[in-house]
Length: 290
Image (cartoon, rainbow, N blue to C red; front, side, top):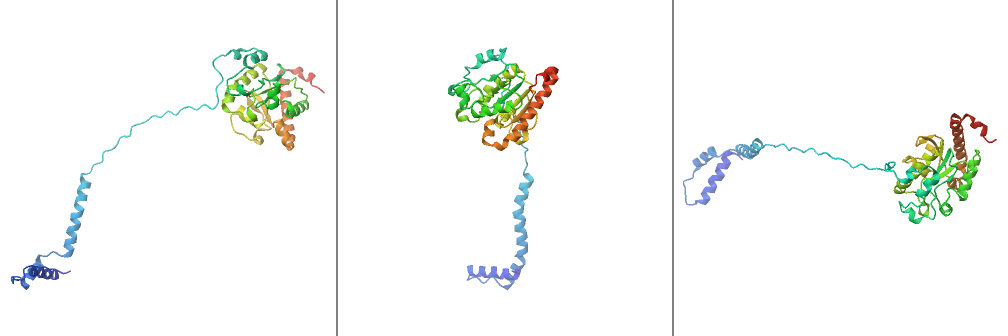
């Protein structure tokens, strides 16, 4: 809107407010026109006024830095595997397998002690140099107090005879000495309590080769998830002893197609055993059965 129109509008407004006055003329309109600011001036002034407070705030605003305190966090150590016992118990001092058995066969360190029928310690020669290890006793083993009996035990006996071993010449033991209910997998707590007994058996036997039967036994001994196809056919070390892993005899009964690779593993046991025995006893070859 032009200055002239603004002035005329103001003059008309004043005349309505004072209708009986005749003091406002066209000259007054021209005067008002010269004194009324333009719309652009008003907008410019308004813009300046609205910006000034913000400018003042920005100029006066100060930012105080916040000091973040340094925090040292120590995460708890989680033990997944119990270390070998450092406190000497009587069973750890046992000089023979028979004395070891007398110390531990009444063990009640875990809940399996309350549900077992028999404590399955192990069986075989105290002079054996081949040690066979399973995971835990089953139903028949729990009844008889001896590892690897029943159909699975009979198959194991045949596998050993195929490489010229009898059960009386080797030693057979399990990681757990008591049967888990319904033959479930051993828990970590049960392994922590029972595996040290196996360590002591190994210490007394001093085997040159270990044959571990089944995936559960392998994972329990080596503390990691594995697959049979990745570990079988290889020589691993458990307690610094050459260890060969193959299928559990019960698994072979359910899956006859696994018998061929199992036979290859048994032959590897024999070759490894012969090689190590020959190094320690050159006369050993004379005792090999024909």
